[in-house]
Length: 111
Image (cartoon, rainbow, N blue to C red; front, side):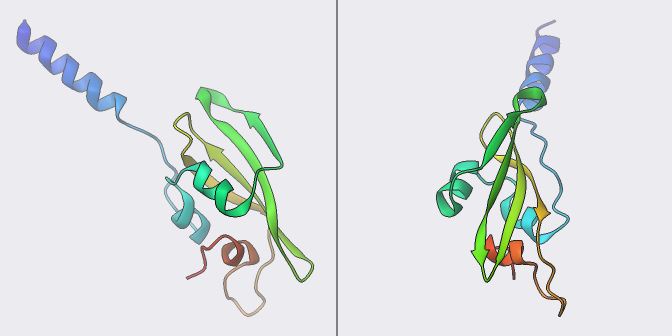
C-alpha cells in the first residue's frame, strides 16, 4: 500500500512538472520559445494588445522593429509562468535575397 502511494505521488510530481512548449520550426521560435515574456517586452517594448486564452495562457500582440518603412508584428502565446510557449510572425517582410525576414532581424533571431 505504501509503495502504491509513493509511486502515485512520484507520478503526480512528474506530471506537474510537465509544460507544453511548441517545438521550434523557425528562427523566431528557436530564439524565443521558453524565454520569459518579461525579457522580450523589456528588450522590445510593451505589447499592443493582450487577450486571455485557454488554460491560463495569454495571447499578446506586439508590433515594433520600425526601420525604413518596415515593421514587425508577432503574436506571443504566454503560459501561466509568464514564459513564451509560441511566437509567430503575423506581419513580416521576407528578404528577396533569401536571408532572414525583417522580424527575425528585429527580434534578434537572425543567425
